[in-house]
Length: 223
Length: 182
Image 1 (cartoon, each protein chain N blue to C red):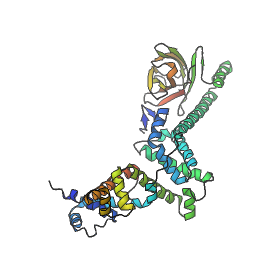
Image 2 (tube, rainbow over the protein chains, first blue to last red):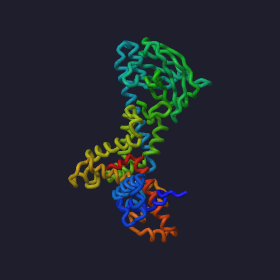
Image 3 (cartoon, rainbow over the protein chains, first blue to last red):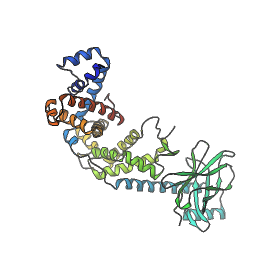
Image 4 (cartoon, chains in turn green, purple):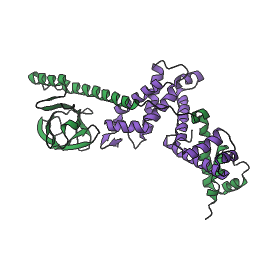
């Protein structure tokens, strides 16, 4: 089947490189006179051809500059340091605002802060500060079980009656649900279970019904 | 805001997400930074800083408003300007220095660098056959007949390759955020 547009494609490319002028190609000129689609295409291809002038031949012929093989690792390291710094600031803010935890209780929390999230015979203790200005906070004690990781979560400042989801995530970003619970503005303690070995857990976090993260913390490597 | 998320997490929230974004865009961000700064060490620093700023602002990214690549290039552009102004970049090599020397605005200088980078990247995305046809005819100014003779193909084939090369270039340039109105 005859396709006059297809027959003119080679000439169209040549005309675009020539600045959009079909010059003495009478067949192309005749076709363009009656084909709006090809006229529009010639305009587009001519713009592309003009853009080619932005690059000299030397840049086209030479090998492109490539980053060193270590740059990807450096990016990951920088982000890890950044996350740690932000996490530390959040933890400090969370506890600075917890005026209710005065006296002996504050001293105990301060010890946890100084030590940071850590491993102990009673499990791996993690502080989960609120995210995005949330007033909620929690502490989680993670214990290795044959079925996965048991999480003893003590949370406060959540919206009473709202549904929340607890998640754990491994190093590759794969997450597993550890269960759901309903919030309370009073401190509540619950036991939840995730089918992920504690040794693989790197993050523990809580989302609300809108799938927004409200509590978040990194899990230190278990010993 | 829908956000750019993987498994309901911002894409840079996990190491796996960072690796994926770096694999997809790290080298091109680096090439843009090298072209802008004229210094490979500073360019690597620019890429690291770009990822840090992107991570900090991840909750403000909306993939319904633009691609991740466009967003990252908006960030690296600012990083390059900051690095150029705050560090002793080799004189005359950074885009900011060049802009000052030419008496043009930094934005205009960046547009030039950006367009040149986009064209370079788009040329690299072409098939070998299409790129060769375009390079021989356009950049080296060889006649279609000469190129056809060298390649051992009909003249019509060379013309056809040039046409499809330009078509592919247009798609690649659009993907790279090139504005044909520019």
